[in-house]
Length: 383
Image 1 (spheres, rainbow, N blue to C red):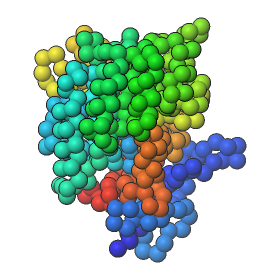
Image 2 (cartoon, rainbow, N blue to C red; image 1 turned 135 degrees about the vertical axis):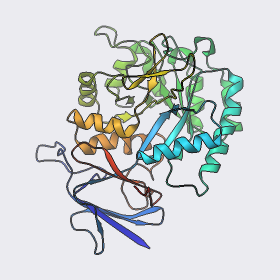
Image 3 (tube, helix red, strand yellow; image 1 turned 90 degrees about the vertical axis):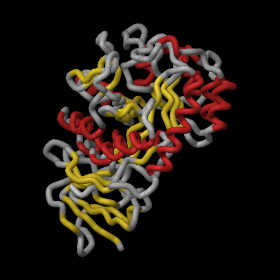
């Protein structure tokens, strides 16, 4: 049976633009029809007969997060399938329709068993559960092939790219890895970048102090993303722009940003959005358990006991609201959290309101961009 909802606003792919080419602050009215777990149709203007009217809310695709290390007390590095399921349900309640479980740098012996656990958790999450939950996409391996800007990563775990080990890991866990973040200085001949690209894995550059001039060969070898722009990389200097500068001027690269109000200053976010038409939001959330040595939640971010930023505590729904509060049009803020990241990992049926796409839909408040209702796979969250 087809269900139709309409609202006073809708964020469709491409969106409507004003006479000067600018996006309107709030998109116009529209509707979405859902049949099972798929979108049967979406459009602007008058809705088909029998539509449920959501009034002043705005319909948007559920969000896609490419970098989730944990949340609350659930650390994905060690969580069992039940813990992963708890995290997925919590993300789902916040409007995140899919995410990449992320593992930071550690001993190479730990990667295979971790991918096995994540695969088990994905299979368990696919079974009917207690309500809508975010789907697990392929994993994001943030390291261990990182460079001279480790941030909160354990420097002892960092290493130069071991291509035979990497190829063996990917072959043994086919389809389980979606993104790998590496540093150019850890892959000096681009062999790892090429091996990953050949297997359909998205290559992101990050945790690096690479010179601006050294980045282009990695883009030529297949790198398409820069991980959490400005964080975990050398500074943007007017005579030495580095990886951050390459991310801003190379049209082949899409930077991801953490918009929690801590990792990147609002003025710098404005510069990024003016320079790049395509930017993806990531949360980079981490677990903050009450344990000695664990990251602590401090003013919206997570910090190690020595004050080092270790990640975020703000999920993508809050990041979209932060951008909207800075004056970013709602359709663009939504696209940065949905359409753009979905495209980066080759998931064209996610992150958009279009016929045939997954019926992952949120309704947001046009006053503050907060999520007010969620449907994942066509199932309402019951709020």
